[in-house]
Each structure stands twice: as C-alpha cells, then as structure tokens.
Image 1 (cartoon, rainbow, N blue to C red):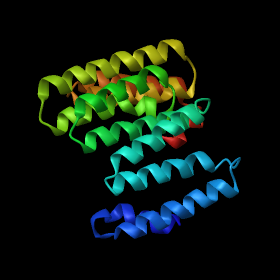
Image 2: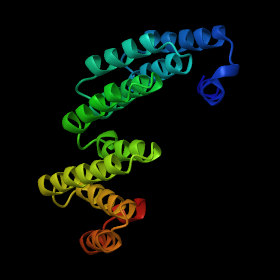
Image 3: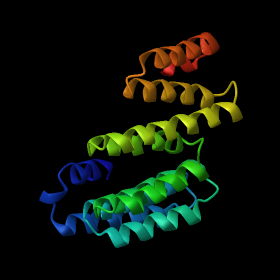
Length: 199
C-alpha cells in the first residue's frame, strides 16, 4: 500500500481517480481492522495526504481536523496534521490562512519536530517569493522563538535543536560570526552527547 502511495504522490496528475479511491479504501480497512494500532494515526494522515494529492482539499481538511481532535494527546501527530492542514491552504494560494495555522503550531506544539521546523519553514516561504523584508522579519521571529525554547529547556534535545536552528537562521541572514558562535555553543555544551552523532 505504501508503495502505491509513493507512486501516487510522485505523479498525482497521471493517476486515475479510481486509484485514489481504491487506496483510500484499503487504508480505511486497515483502520477498521486495527483501530487501536499505533499505526492508525499515521494511516489517517496518509488518507488526508491522498485527498490532497487528488486536489480534494475539503476532504483532506476533514481528515486532518479529525486527526487533530482524535489524537490531541499525541503532540507529534497533532502537529503533523496541523502542518498538513496548512498545506491545504497553500495549495489554494491562501498563504495568510496557511501562516495562521503555522503560527498556531509554533504556539501549541513548540517542542515537536514540526513545531521546531515551522519558524524556518515560514522564512523559507518568504525567501522563495523574493520578499527580502518579510524573510528577514521571519528569521528574526524564528531566532526569538528558538531563544525562548533554549531558555525554557536547558540541557535538552530541544535546546540542542534550537541552537542549530539559530545558527542556520544567522547563516541565512549572512550573519556568519553569530552563526559560528552558535555552533560553537553546540560543540561546547554537547561535545560528549550522542545528539551530535545525529546532527
């Protein structure tokens, strides 16, 4: 099923509509047969992504909103669903709607993988649009966010990630000395940490 999924999302325009429906039905049967499986939240997300690939954004949103409510206690899953929800608005060229959701992710799920990546994702969007002023503003907001993460989560994987993100923000702004200083802090504080081998 996952192989079929990969083929569909790689070339969604060349896939006949019934192929989407058949795969969605297969995923729904998996959920029905194994409702308490740890895989169930991820399968729901795959169904939403199939609707997105099919350009059925209304159905995709219903799935992502369902996941956010049903798995509210699973922060990583809920944040992933919200990120996908934001992408449905991007698919409609509604960046304002998407950014509102991305800001909500940053506020609600700051320590998830999605939450930590989202401030840079916003900056990258403005950079892709060649909007220099908003790109720089977004990087400044990102740096402020990561400093807050560091202050509240010392000596943690979240601090480690935030320091690396800050360095990347500085490098993206051509603030080389500050970026190098930030990476130096990573090496000083985490030189004997297994986290460095994951970097």
